[in-house]
Image (cartoon, rainbow, N blue to C red; front, top):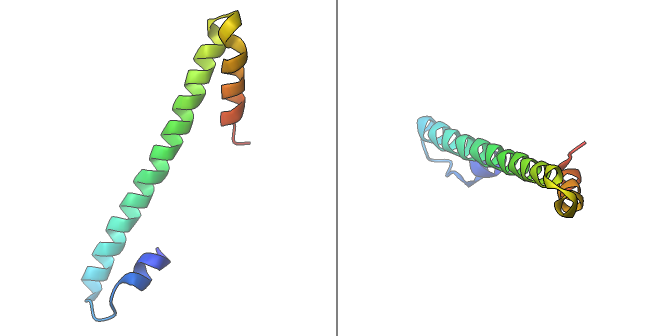
Length: 70
């Protein structure tokens, strides 16, 4: 947000600055939620592989372990 605010010309009116920051905030939020959704999908995919059977179990378990963020 600070980078976006510093890129806005000083002469712009306050409403224009607020609108630009609002758009940047929405885009950042969408990007973060999108990244989290990808991590969850990857974890679900790994869990599905782990439950399938002997050949897929090891790769599925590795996929689930790599998605953990703790």
